[in-house]
Image (cartoon, rainbow, N blue to C red; front, side, top):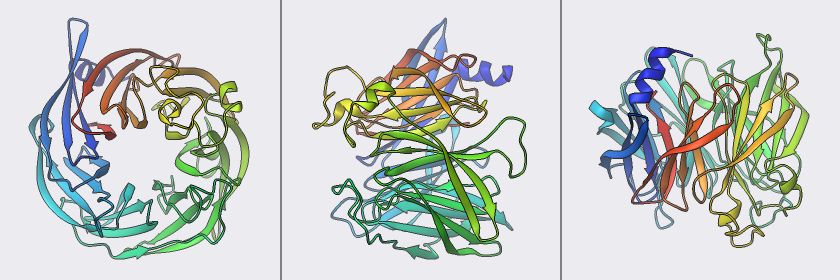
Length: 391
């Protein structure tokens, strides 16, 4: 591990937390004489009515905030900020975006141009933006409204398309969008010269009732190019984690399921669907472990409601064949852990709690992969829906 990074992050590290009440808070994690503190050093309410997702470009010192809007709004918005000293945010630009945006990703493709894709959940939409990489923004070049003509097994959640994440593949040619409502992962190819319009290719179909939410690519050790590539994703509704082998074809992507397991292990086998929904999924920086959050205790219809003081984060060891071995189910530190992020060294996990309105930072053992102890917590003004490190 990089000693200079460890030293910097052990003395102070900067995080950004989006809250659905309209705030983005800049927090500083400080270590002094073996103890930690987490403080709010600045705050902005210039990110729209309902911030939902942050993309942090630490190199260019730009932060993008996707605002999903409120139910009374016709549109959401995309907002950009310059990251200043100690993580202070100065507004650069703002444009309209489709209502209910919940996730986004971007790529720099040519001549200083940046292609940005966002996914909207309630009124399902995928939007493609093209703008300069200096923080200035332009309205979307394309908005796609996908539909689903088949109601899924979880009828209350799968009555139509519900896009939920944006994933750039390792070849950097395709954007994948998990569709929780349609039980598919949509695949889009961008134009190499203009980015938009996106072309939708054949989707990757999950098992009925999976409700794919978020995903991450992983490559088996010692493999290169297109060999040993897998997509790991969490089924929010089935409460499972899946491993699929990915292959590139002349027409796009193909996949084959190699493994599935419940996020909560044996406990998960006893729980009805959609009573312990999964939320975030991430691979550790060393590519050896998978982390998944579950939100069971905060749901009124869950048999686990308020039986513990916290929701959960599960840690799996990723085996060479992409099967998963459950190592630990640890507390997240609050209710409704909608999202979490690992720092660059992998020894810290920051969890954003939508139900508790807190950011909780955990110490993680890089060698064993286990989450070991809570080192800091900060209560914020609104429900925390995203927390990310300034890397």
